[in-house]
Amino acid sequence: MSGRFSKKTADSSPQRVLAAFKVGVDNVIFSVDTTLNRVLVLLVMRQQEPYLGQWCLPGTLVRQGETLEDAAYRILDEKIRVKNLYLEQLYTFGNPRQERGVPASPSVRYLSVSYFALVQFEAAELIADGVSGIAWYPLDQVPLLAFDQNRILQYGHRRLCNKLEYSPVAFDVLPEVFTLNDLYQLYTTILGENFSDYSNFRSRLLKLGFLQDTGVKVSRGAGRPASLYRFDANAFAPLKDKPLVFI
Amino acid sequence: MSGRFSKKTADSSPQRVLAAFKVGVDNVIFSVDTTLNRVLVLLVMRQQEPYLGQWCLPGTLVRQGETLEDAAYRILDEKIRVKNLYLEQLYTFGNPRQERGVPASPSVRYLSVSYFALVQFEAAELIADGVSGIAWYPLDQVPLLAFDQNRILQYGHRRLCNKLEYSPVAFDVLPEVFTLNDLYQLYTTILGENFSDYSNFRSRLLKLGFLQDTGVKVSRGAGRPASLYRFDANAFAPLKDKPLVFI
Image (cartoon, rainbow over all chains, first blue to last red; front, side, top):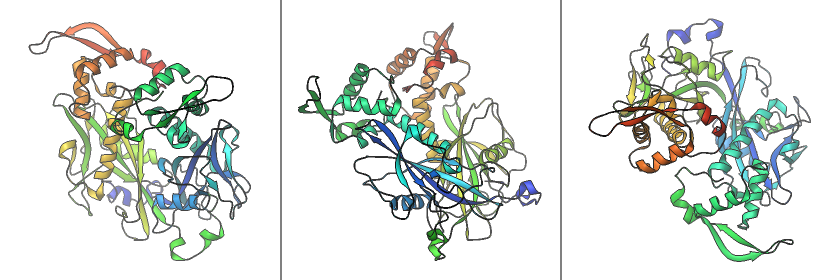
């Protein structure tokens, strides 16, 4: 920051002129359909040029007097109803060649600050007011997105996988009670087959000590009845700031 | 992004006018003095108003035609000579009330994209050309920084601690060969006393299998000679994308 008002930045040679920006927020909102075992991402269809009719991440440009987070929540409030939506900043993309999304002046650059959330599929309700399309798009079927947003989505997917490995985020999207197999299936859906074998996964999770056996068993199909567990937030609390691996 | 050209954003009521931004980059560059066991951060002294004479993170405003990363590397190239400087994006701060750092127009907001790096103390050479002050500041003695940058520094420090817990970043700042006690001391310097007891730390690190015993022993003080190890990048390669905890 020391150079901000120095002779150098005051120099008027073209390469030293400060760039002017509009700033947008783009949200990567994931969900997991635990019935069909699919990772889903929230997409909306553009109803203006450019990229008319193409899918994109739900985003908006930041208005005067509005924080980045305000803008991100504002646009999501119009698209989805969900309790306890917690957005986490993902990454800021700002390439001088990617000055799309801002109309008119070619001298104004566009910067995208992306946000991430994982929400519970059953509890989230889409709002289709005033959009020509909105969808929980299966991640493996996402088409080419407007504004080259696939790289933002890809970055968000990496974050999702990392969070699953290092944090108890899975319990935000599972029902309140679940079998260890449900939990394993959720991990497999997001991280892919063979991320870990079931028995290692099971013993590691149980060893961490925050899965509480409810004493209730459930029968599914032909196998023997499986115990239902719940995530014990109190037991997890002392572990919260410790480095942990979940898989 | 769907709403960017909608009727809503075209509405001219004051709260719907898009914000105009200048974008700056601020670098949080850490180093560790392994002799004196101190965490250091690179600061420069401001030589203009506002905040004349106060310390701040080395940063700059982004120029036309320049990527965010280009700007971050440009300002660092003027301040420090170090091999293999690898900047990682930290966080983007942009509050409508924090419109400092940009002169003139009160209608132009300032957004700070921060970058992070950990560099080897002995290999990094400060460049004092054209600054009124530059320093490797001990982290525990950092004063109030210009532009409220202490919160950026704090965020950077959290990232540093996380990286130490989950990645082999320590081996970037240690000498090529080191004792397990050197490694433990580095962790203690950054994470604080009692982050782990020595014998647990030692056995966990050895178990991970990428510390190669050089067969050479070194005597320091009165204790018995300690083995010198080196980080074995080949042994670490297959673990690179696996979730690991180092402490």
